[in-house]
Image 1 (cartoon, rainbow, N blue to C red):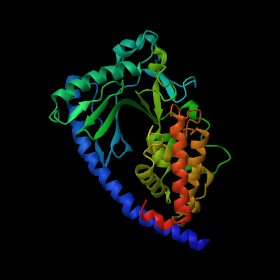
Image 2: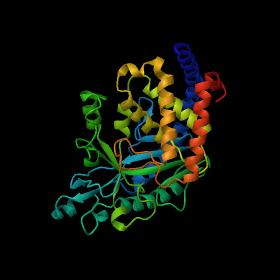
Image 3: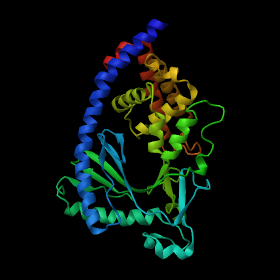
Image 4: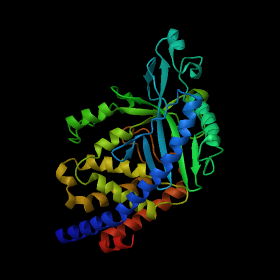
Length: 359
């Protein structure tokens, strides 16, 4: 048993050093290329409208606010200033969303975003995004990369296609620190010792983002009140949870397997599903020793089996907001197909670790 476990870990480490690292290097190169173009477009936007200040900056070889969705798809979060006169309200009526309401009607004229406030006092995510989309469209025509970048049509999201190879979504957002949403108040679960009080305090201090984008749970049938809502996102908090042990290595292997074998019709699975399942696996295995390097094989198998179970049940709850289903709106046939493919992959890795050389 120990020998089999050691053999799997050996092949997984080899896979990580060869396939995962070359994936990372390729994506880093793409990110540099993509960020040059996006920065140029955002610079033009800022000239036209100084309220949309580019927050895309590089720190320690990482671009602040950039998420990799797949090797050809990225999201850049553009942080807006001055949320000050609004109260954050998440009453659970829209899973995964919240609204920003004027704290006092008399403060309307004091807001930097006055023309995007609805009659009932809400700061409209849709109105801000619509204005931003217009500005980006104009900037694309003026920027120095205009030959290689164009707007993606037929969507209310702000998406750029770069060199006909990459798609980047630029999402206006507010950073919320010092508060924690009511809809995530159940976390951490009282009977689970992970992640421990210090890490919990760090995670909650990171806070969350409010994004102006289409809401997962509404899927096309938005009323005006709903399209004014903002989507909750916990990227920094989630990253902090995955520090220590082989957690990040495990996620890197999962992302690489997904890119190479689970990029399927209907796009049932993305990197975020993998990240979510690693967080759940941390709860199931709360001891730090469960994430030692020699446990990498066990953790990976556990996550792949959990993924199959989620795909078969057609439900993958968001880690912080379990009422939000990350498979919402995915075609059932695509989820079934992904379950079969994941099962093949898991069986192959478990019964023949050497097969990782070809995977």
